[in-house]
Image 1 (spheres, protein in one colour):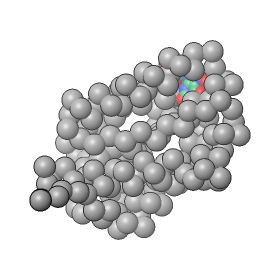
Image 2 (image 1 turned 30 degrees about the horizontal axis):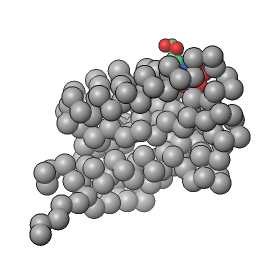
Image 3 (image 1 turned 90 degrees about the vertical axis):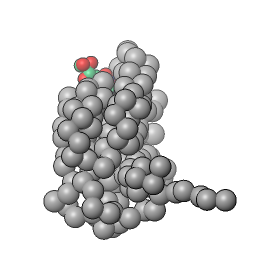
Image 4 (image 1 turned 60 degrees about the horizontal axis):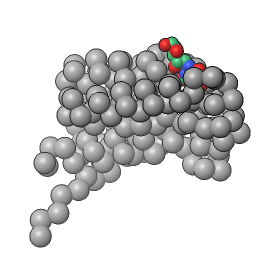
Length: 153
Ligand code: INI
């Protein structure tokens, strides 16, 4: 049986991180986690581009432009949507998730989902480098694996 899978190595590609400013105190921790993961797996910091957007709702549009540019092996989307602070929590979460998935499917460029969606700030902190790991680091690891896998398929 021939098995194809991505290795967690940098390769020659460049990576983009799209991050939302809303709840920046959480998102900045996700960015640090993603950058640290890329660098520890051999990605040169010059090969990482960070793009800011206002909120999680805007992540897909920026990710789409980056994916269409053809410059990146994978794109990581980072954000924090906290129910306590919004009446349209479900809408923001679902549009961000659907939009991010669509970018990957429409362009063939891996786009990973590092958006923390929680009931309250405490749960967001847990997912941004404390008790429950760092979702930015997880999303960067997934980006590395998919970037390595895509050329094999
Ligand atoms: N955007 C977020 O990234 N997180 C949130 O928790 C949030 N809340 O609470 O509303 C949020 N809203 C802004 C939204 O993403 C858009 O930027 C805005 O609606 C303008 O399009």
